[in-house]
Image 1 (tube, rainbow, N blue to C red):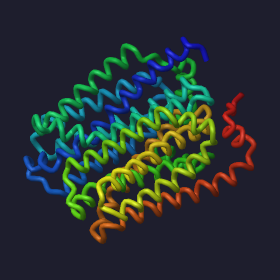
Image 2 (cartoon, rainbow, N blue to C red; image 1 turned 90 degrees about the vertical axis):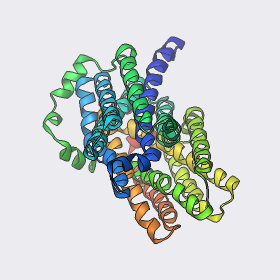
Image 3 (cartoon, helix red, strand yellow; image 1 turned 180 degrees about the horizontal axis):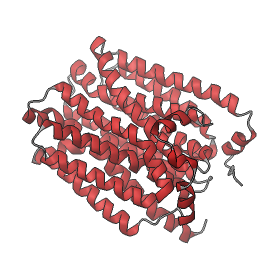
Image 4 (cartoon, helix red, strand yellow; image 1 turned 120 degrees about the vertical axis):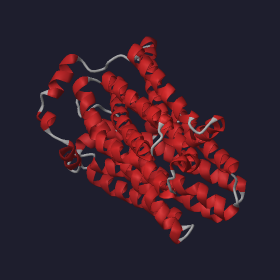
Amino acid sequence: MSKSLRIKINMPLFILMVNIFIALLGVGLAIPVLPKFILEFGASGKDQGYLVAATGLTQFLFSPLGGKLSDKYGRKIITIIGLGIIMLSQLMFSIASELWVLYLSRLIGGIGIGILVPANMAYVADVTTIENRGKGMGLLGAAISLGFVIGPGIGGFLAEFGLRVPFYASAFAAGISMIVSFLFLPETLSKEQQYAARNTKQEKDGMVHDILKSYKVSYFVLLLLVLTMTFGLANFEAIYGLYVSEKYDYTPKDISIILTVGALVGVIIQAVLVDWLLRRFDEIKVINTCFILSAVSMVFVLLSGNFLFMLIMNVFFFLFTSILRPAINTLLSKMAGSEQGFAAGMNNAYSSLGNIIGPSLAGILYDVSYNIPFVFGAFILLGSMVMSAVWNQKARRNADFVSILRGQNQSS
């Protein structure tokens, strides 16, 4: 690949990373602010949980649509629309005076994320080759992880200037990103490709059809792995702060340091080492190894309350889960062939399911025992490794799958 081509690819990838970061940042910003913010509306802790889950619900419902729309009308326009919806959502949240407006805002925000993320993932598949797709997905995954994990920290910092300031800031950032995407993000699909996608039978099919179709595609197990990986991560993040706060009297500052350091290490690894790992070892080996190691580090959190030990275990956990996301996304993209938009949409849909189920179940299990959410999360991650290994053995009998693992384009 020539130097000029690298520059053309890097600029769009950078814009996409900023887009994804802002989208996921907006979700996390609300977490530290909500407990005090909802008191203005006479709401309860139950409402806080529902407000967090609301975004995941509409994200799940609209992710298949986002992928299909990006195939039919282009990645750029769907990206711009998604950012516009996110900006509207954050503005509504920041000026709300009624509880129902908060719910509506979070639901609208989920729609924006639901159509933005699949369009951006499909864009990465468009501008990368089979050989360097791992690097592209690693960079996008780094932005997802960074936004999702450090969002609460940034939200807590901005809240010092006012409880509504984080949401104004998020709306402003989404607006700027929307303008930058409009001005500088080139379209990757030709008019002919968009026309062909609009005139396929799939155009008449709805979301339910897409969900049912996902059960039959060759990469369905990878979608399940996206679900279980996200479940494990969301399960851990939802309960970790409460766990160390109640059991070891950690302060919000302690928790923020641990989570932020873990997230930053994960981001650096994604940006620097994922491409090398996927070239050195095939995706399946990386996926299976990271599932095992993330499960082990999740259980090890229960062994000691020492701050340094906790910091190291969190770094390991975020490190392995940060490698998992781009490894799965890369193999999924390779297997999707010409269905990049559909695959990206279903990827985001199954991920949002994990973001809904993970925190909800973690809270229920935590009420039973402090330790159970971590043990159950580790069990799910280990089960994912077994599922991946079994699927891999069956899939390797297919010559096309073997060629994909070797980095060859299936259509060539």
